[in-house]
Image (cartoon, rainbow, N blue to C red; front, side, top):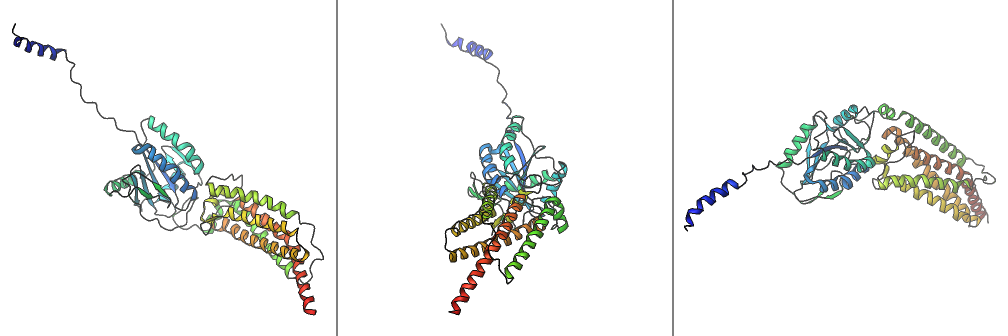
Length: 408
């Protein structure tokens, strides 16, 4: 049998039975979630959200997540585009970051709000509690729905497009890159180094293009600021009365029976200062109550002494020191007890003066008032008043002892 004659029929049969070639499947674009967050470089809550929430999410989702950060601390602050492969910065002048933020607040009917303020689609999240709790879930929801573009804010799309074009034109840099707030975050290779941030005072209420006037600051929180002014006047009056008591010639024959008020007030003060220290160090939102806007105060640059030591921790140290001196005074001889009374008076005077300074800052500089801070200011003033008579009497005792030594 001639096998060669069978080759052609077999080839034709295989061609007929073979399935028709399928066209190459078109690649489905990967869904992307794009969000924008308004921040201030000196806002501790912003630092927490950027470095502990946004960067880990970028590493987790890669190209599926793009974040645009807009600085509102100055009228024409820079914008930052955060992607899995780096950070890109772009300064812009029209529209400015503060103007965009004000537009967003008006879109949602908000009279005021602080930072961080994150917007994805038509949902906004505010603060270092809501953003970590809700943003990851929103990312998953939008990715499952096919992604979502930049929020519909006038001028935002143009800025995002400009930043993206700049990112593509920039060369890659080292993986370790400073975050916009100055903290260090580790990103994958291909990171672009952002430009240096301007040194400016953050504004965490409704941003305005020019420096707010005194009237504008007071109107931001009229009830809380009015209460702070009343407290300030009361503390100044108490300080004036204390000066009069210390300078008068006749000293009280004996100290009034108020010694036990001092440790009780210190315990209350430690509770208040401890809570504020927790808020400041853990970067969580404080419970403010119906009066004041304590989160704005805690987010301001004045919440840390010299930009380093949280005021809450400083207050806690102060109350602990007063408590320790008071406890030591109960075990000392008369002469040393007088020195302890003088030390208590000086400590409480310093505490009152510092409280007057902080209370002045709230309505007249920050434009918001912290009810917890006012409580601490009241406690400091009461401690000074209760230490006044024993301290004045101790000065008199020391003066008499010195006079007797000179007489002999």
